Length: 126
Figure 1 (tube, one colour):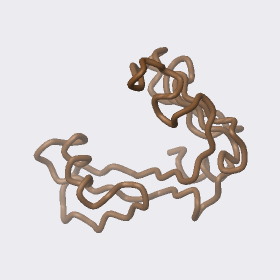
Figure 2 (spheres, one colour; figure 1 turned 60 degrees about the horizontal axis):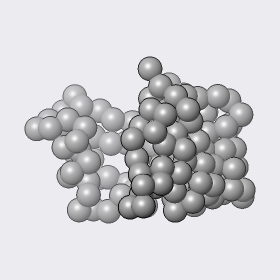
Figure 3 (cartoon, rainbow, N blue to C red; figure 1 turned 90 degrees about the vertical axis):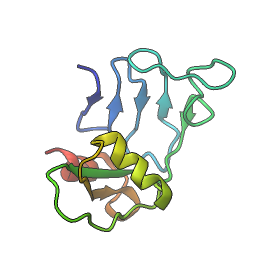
Figure 4 (spheres, helix red, strand yellow; figure 1 turned 90 degrees about the horizontal axis):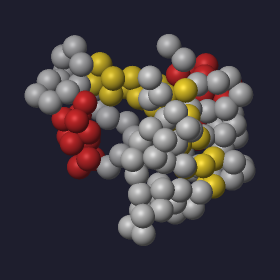
């Protein structure tokens, strides 16, 4: 019910209490924040739920990537990511659909498509 929330004036927000919030033009301000434990349970080593992801409550984003997931099978395509390392791809695909062929097609990259919320929603809203 609260997995992801999208509103046209900001980027994606995850969780019922905005556990993870990405602001508009998130690369030029520190309006993004992590405030876990409303929907998702995440704590850093000290037990702090606000710095578990980025080391602080507020943060600036350097890159965002969004992929379309296709589990229908077929030939695996080259995986294009600046964030996910080659050795992590197999694990990621296994988490998505264990034992099935999974294609991950890059549909949005902030450094390529723009950091503003309009560009994000144009590429990612269905």
